[in-house]
Length: 202
Image: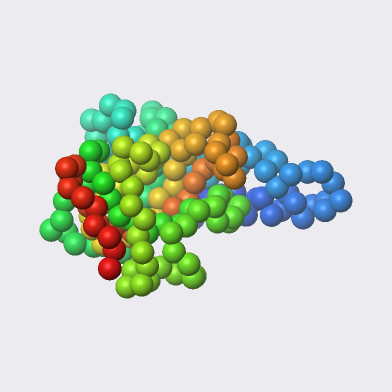
């Protein structure tokens, strides 16, 4: 079942290219059936969490009532969660940021068709030794970002999938269409409590 869920996930991720390739002369958009395709990715990730919680885990949106149990059951709405995978662990002695903090983070964001929409670093992979992390107030980010970051520690690198309900909603924003599931690579580089100045990056 786990392999089946991953297969469904990658099939959905690659679906955009298939729709375009079917008929290059047509007016069919690469975003055809966008809502359904994006939902398939989230549904597959929810299945992966249920079947293999050691690899993927789900975090309920910070502004919703916490669950009694730290798991994702079929009774829960899958779009209430962000779906995370730890790629590299950071400093376990540090404290995750809270809602009133500011942070510095390296990031790259994709749509499910593989299109990079936004990023703070260049190159195929992140090199924290030469990157310049972007700074953000925790209060100024989309719900999915704020949810994930409140569980991360300095140095952590996570892959995070955010459903449209915790991202840019049904209308989207700029190059992000409505109903978009967002894939992020996030590296938390620094946490700055409220009342302190976010320093320049050396």
